[in-house]
Image (cartoon, rainbow, N blue to C red):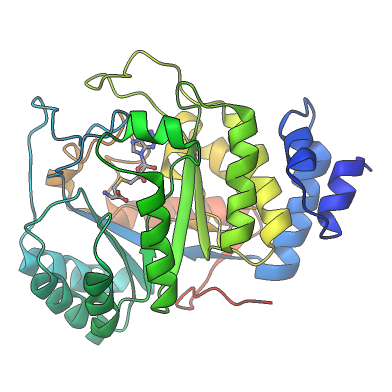
Length: 340
Ligand code: SAH
């Protein structure tokens, strides 16, 4: 067996070994090891988390994201609070037990409005994940008191210079502080990165994985960067899907019981085949989009999002068929991380 792989499996985690796995031409052994560890620690059940994109207004200027405030071509929308709650009620027959609400950084969603929505969703017996960007400790505390179980806030890249360039007005340090605050409050934290950002190095991706290990996140989304034509870096290349797959596998081997989604961006580049490959290389989470059809086109973080035209009940049929082929099933639990 590859020596670096052996070290990492045995719990000796170093950046050098991570890097040497990321540059492998043939990473079959790594995928196989990740698949085995995934089965041992989180089993064959796939966690399904439905996601509703509630608003595409955003005050930030992230160079990679189609929702950036300077993108004047994008038609903006915002669901009403009642519409959000109704959509979750509508989704009950789908049988998923956990819902993610995501939005651009949109100040319309005051603490009061968000907490009211969370309480109403909790009454319907769902685990609730929010993904609204960077907020104060106090706001996260209110979210928690209302019943929020989890929060998604990817650190995007740990290369501080690159972060500063790509996210004008924001800082890597504050991003990490937000994650620490969430963790401190007992909210499960989802982080993650994009792979293939212009200027990003393999060395920094190894650092990202070391950070996953140090921060011990509950969920980690690793996705390829996909250029959006109406952004400053729209002429760049998409991220390398094999590198994404290797990063996911290595992360599984290191963090063992963590939740790792098949990121939508990955399926976008490599649809059905992509999902199967990721599920066989360490991933155990799928996030079906249940945003009302009329808004989907407008939540364009990157172009050609996977399954964006597929109605949720039709998607579920496809998902069941896919999981059957993969020898996996849908979890009926709330999908909390169970630490070993
Ligand atoms: N505003 C929230 C959530 C919305 S963006 C937040 O800041 O967390 C959700 C995620 O989409 C981002 O964390 C980023 O990792 C991803 N994303 C944005 N632009 C992308 C692109 N061009 N390609 C791939 N992923 C992208």
